[in-house]
Length: 461
Image (spheres, rainbow, N blue to C red):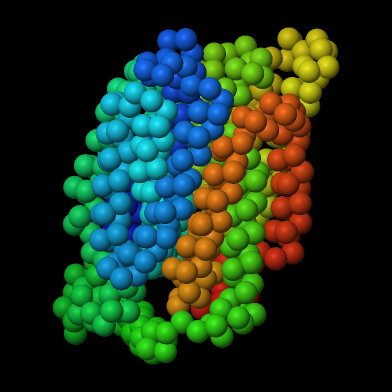
């Protein structure tokens, strides 16, 4: 029987570290409502209403920053620690928000998005590693899903705030999250794994005691704690020996590592080309063009609430249903949602009478985002952190995140053009087809990692 009291500081760490994720979620949700204002005749920019090309550039710059942040933070986290890296990430996050109120041209907004994206690159690269290294097996899944839960909460905050405030006021409000994060996260210790890897044994033992809620003297330590600490020391010693030999081609070119990289890149690519993240950034525009009976901003708020509920559902089910099952159900559900949405917009193009079904765009898009949040939008980060060998964890995470950002640049830049050339229905049907192919990939290649130690997961690859 697992004592829940020994996990409470692990949950506290998961909540505190993801305060900065809320900020990044707000950064990703901000364009959805703001683009409607910035493209209108009442645009506050000195250059006037933004064009579709401007919108594409502003939207995609978050991924350019994300790619830069991923590369830098992967190195920084290994060199100086997960905690110092995440504290540093708060600075570009704050800078991104503070530039927005003073922006007068789309170029200024692009710069702001690069800063915010840089923070996002660090968050989505380092937070999964941080939570994986401090968590026990029975809470690792829940802590992993907190990333996307708080990210979606940030998106919803941006949607709701945009209903009551201007886009500049929203930026001022959400910039405060960086300060809250610094205040809360500063007091937490570095992960035991990283401290062991850097031969800081005493600090590692103290950190592990904190995260396992152990206040006993050393001679009273529980046996399971001693076993875990000895295991970490053994892994740290092995890692130190590996570091002395440096990273060699044989470390990458072996069946386990190749399969881990293939699975990681595969599920990240599937997540991006499912279209969910890209469509969220343009949800206000999508609802406007689909003919929904609700206003675009109200529609985005509804979607934001549904998305948050999906993320919460994921935290409840991840340690019950398992990662693979949730990924498969989620991907199949996203395909169904795209097909329904695409069918409605296609019938509208063909000028069929669909006014009686004007609720379908909000319903189908909300369903798509809900079911995506249950698995496809959040679990890839957790699975990647779990399946990567210890020595290659940072490199593997960086490779997968770089794949995410590169594909994100393409999708966010060209989504408006895709909708214009292919029609909304053609674009959505394409995303649905990719999801169907993704289901086959998940069935064949992705292992179940629920309740397994990292060693067991690697042995089963």
